[in-house]
Length: 529
Image 1 (cartoon, helix red, strand yellow):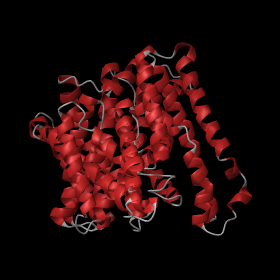
Image 2 (cartoon, rainbow, N blue to C red):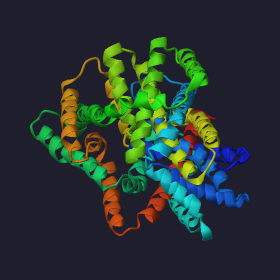
Image 3 (cartoon, helix red, strand yellow):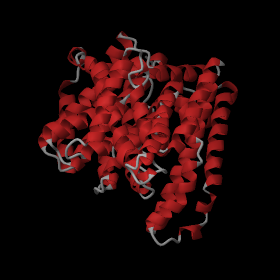
Image 4 (tube, helix red, strand yellow):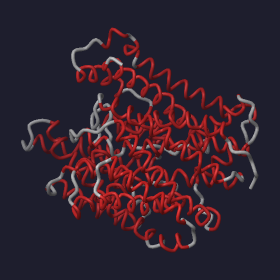
């Protein structure tokens, strides 16, 4: 391991990049219901920026990339849970969202750092995206080919978003009577014409986009026609809200439970043995105590609920790190749903505290996976892991500081809508709001649970989650996602995946960042900021 000076410059620039990554990840994730690993994209960007400022140290570039990538998974944990509060009509402040992000992120880093030696050095878990980022940084970008590809894709996505929403650039367009009217006119057109679902479908892949598309087919070509022809419901909208949404959310919840039992629970059994080999120490325990006190006073939680949040972050962060290492997938929203179910039906906490609990756990699981991907990159390159840890912490804080304003601005557009379907948050809302278990929701839970157990034997255990989401998100989103997934299948066959993966990431970053800025500008204009 190289002895290098502390990389202040890399962490400072990486923190700014983490904010940008959080912005486009939040925007794109709310549209397509997922956030892709940003390691490869941030590796290329970090190399380009280091070249501009005259830096030649690969380890410094790695620390910048580590810091920058954190914003993506921090944003994912927020958008998978917090929109449920707005859909429930509950009040949350920007400061609350900031604290949720910082708390969940720091808990993850506290718990996951001691696992680095066991999972990465001794077990040699692959962490595919972390390994890919290391290969890119090690090879460098001679001639700037990758940088030019990413920049061109980013520019195309950004130009598309500007052209699509050109009317938003004219100040007079914001002189509207009500926020609801403003949001509807500003975004109903743009939401249906977007490159993000196509690019996102490519990154998600054929298997899950096919499952998602089959869910849409089941709703729009089976469920809706049958319900309308039988006279059970008066119109399509009532079928979608009364049957498709609770049924689909139920499938997601049931599949999450089954997936946790088959894939997550076995990992829990290894937790004690892993931590016996690590050294969390007194400082770690003091840090945990501090975060418990922070949650008690910041969120007005009871001590048992704060302790449950810490325990949930500890367990789910561990599972997230382990499954990410083995499968390159971090099913963070699944962990949040499982803990949400337990807290709801075993302890009966209120809706606000339930969603905050889910948010902390979801963020912790996401950041745990992100950190371990980055530690894998650093291990291959010989980067000081403490420098990476500092970068991760800085990335968590910087991204959290903007997520409060971002979510409040996005809320003006509306969550659970055509513009921002927020499918995971819909499932969180269904659990938090349930006084009992409605028949349709229960049927979905049973179906998702059974289907996951059956498909797990064929290595398709997570596919029912995508199917359930497809049942209740607009088909206008499902079709381009499916097209992107099919394109991925043929591009994989042609062995050109890495090039087009960079293109897809650049398009999402460009359109997502411009789209997020436009939403923020529209909200600021309306509020007179």
